[in-house]
Image: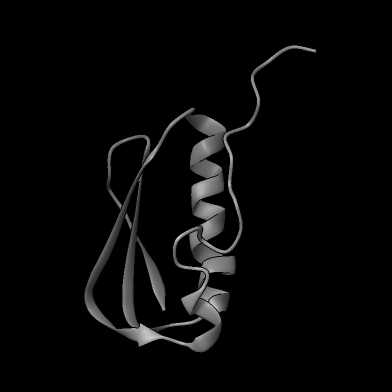
Length: 79
């Protein structure tokens, strides 16, 4: 499971891996939190705490580096 860490400064996304992390955790919790932060800030900081972490499921292993899919900051360039 991935839990959001509350009370962090603006532009900081905190994620804590608790127990076993599944692919669905990235899709339901991590990726949306990062996307929301990037909608508000051009750059963000990510804290990923692994203190109570026991492992990844097979589906989650490959998603760890990019939170499931590439996430980019929204374009601010005018057409």
